[in-house]
Amino acid sequence: MVLKKNGLNLSVELGPLKLKNPVMAASGTFGYGEEYAGIIPLKSLGALITKGLSLEPRKGNPPPRLAETPSGMLNAIGLENVGVEAFLQEKMPFLRKAGCSVLVNIFGGGEDEYAEMARRLSDVEGIAGLEANISCPNVKAGGTVFATEAKAVYQVTSKIRQATSSFLMVKLSPNVGDIVKIAAAAEEAGADAVSLINTLTGMAIDIKTRTPVLANITGGLSGPAIKPIGLRMVWQVARAVRIPVVGIGGITTAEDALEYLIAGATAIQVGSAHFVDPRASLRIIDGIQGYLRASGLTSVSSLIGSLKVS
Image (tube, rainbow, N blue to C red; front, top):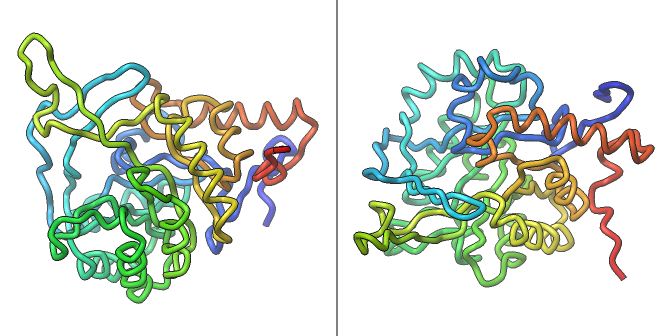
């Protein structure tokens, strides 16, 4: 079914997952959806991605764990979440009525934990698919982050794929030497799509006290400051893999989103912008429509990968 609004076809396909429009609310910035339900109509979104979820509840890191930076922010939340049991009992009843596709972001300390999370969520009504956050330390491998080695990416993605037939999107880290090699490993292991980029590692110092601003010392940098990096990596990956790419990083306006689509992203995620304007996703959807009308285009899919290079 072709989904049209004002005569425009905004629908996109991420492999087996069909979205009414290409704008998704990014994990970690949108809670479990209910927090924003009184501010925006969730049914307007292409999808919402829940806060990262683990087998057991996590309290996260001690405060302070957020800090503003020029054109961005640092966070060291520490993946605080309610755990899968509480999520299924307390969060899913609302999410089933959200009116948009719901993806659950999952993580674990080892391949078996990722697989168990996938199994637990695989047949749950109301869950359209999973986004695997692999920017986590592999406890069994001495703390090496899964996302930084192609072999580890292949292994953890394969383990998840074996545990579920649900839509699987793997979220990639920019803190790597060759993002294309990492994305190719996820594709080869059975991912239906890849999303990138996750945050860049950074830090801030209070010069008055000469101490780190964050209790964790380092944190993840997000916001407009990282958009040029995200855009470059999405362009590189989209040219190299056959599966859909979802762009993330510094998207605050429709123009930002359009850049990612033109670079090759099939859809985009809005993250830190929600902290500045909770209605950012709606503005971006409206802006994309306005651009299509002004350009004489009828379908958002005509923009995907349309970058002209000499």
